[in-house]
Image (cartoon, rainbow, N blue to C red; front, side, top):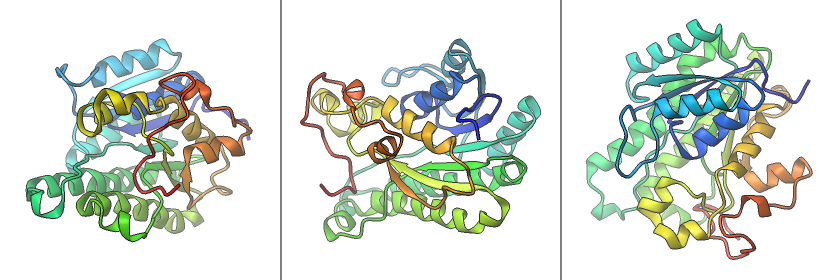
Length: 277
């Protein structure tokens, strides 16, 4: 198959900024259609961009963007968003489950409303978006689901590190692996993708470590290029994987990752959660 997303339609959850937007912009370079489902309708003082500015960036990059304000937790909202994407572009070829919530509080300190939020967005949202898009993905000639979640690392220090967040993220990966097997007969691929290092996003800046961790991170473009590599592979030949960004790029012959460094020349990157050295 041609390694391109030209003419393909991507449906990305939570794509207003960060990794989701980077994946969208990489696809837009090929002339892809990108439907973005996100809640950020109006500017937020701590968050860059909205779903509308993201769609405009997609247009400027050479693709066709569709901004959809909605909530991945709500069944009617997701169905309406999928319908809008299909009505506009004629189908869906790729789903990227990017929407996610994070809270690293220890168990006794975590309010249940935060536990519920992580599970509603990460688990329910991933399952619901995938489920609703599947009838359309099955009609694609190279249907892909890509879920941004980690490999299942059952080392005790990861299981006990941040129990609620671990449960929510591992459930996303279980969904990705399960969908891969369930949809194999329909020719729809499903994979998970996770970064080796922290990625310079709003979550890292606002919640995890501020400027110091941002400086020790890689840019969202490394995840975008890894996602692109996966999404342009034959669905029937690459499915059921829990992939790491630098390993995917190495398979593509890309081993010099300096272009993705927030701080040029650094070798002291902050490792991401759930990955052992």
